[in-house]
Length: 196
Image 1: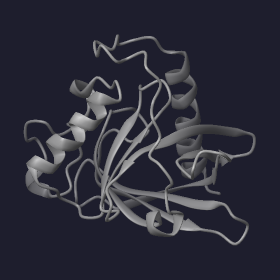
Image 2: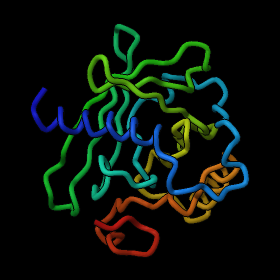
Image 3: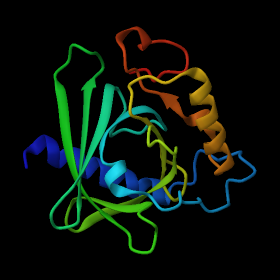
């Protein structure tokens, strides 16, 4: 594991810890206190593969990346290889890759995973929604300080994005904090997209 991967992994772990302890900014959603509801019975084989990061709640480990996506693959030991790819600030930058090792939390219908950059550090994230065709997905973090919108394609329609935000709102998220990730150079600097 090179130094850059170690720093990224420590950043993810530190962010998860900080989010667990953080009470700011306050969440104005009237459903903020309700626990997240997991997606029912995730088919792991169908969930594997590439997911583009359409939007997330910005945090320092992924902030400033464009064209980002995750790739999941089942491993012989039952774990899941979790690779994150992205380019820093612009599409001409070299692609960066960071790796996590995930495992399904038993009794969750494959919808809650424990992610670890290396032992003993780990944090849990939750699959909140997957459409029937496994083309769109929502991922969350127990205290709602982190959240992601995924798609199999680097772009989705505005209508589909709006529907996904409604689902996040119904889960108690402050959707005003969710910002889109540029997946094409023309999206950089556009309203609703993350800035560097």
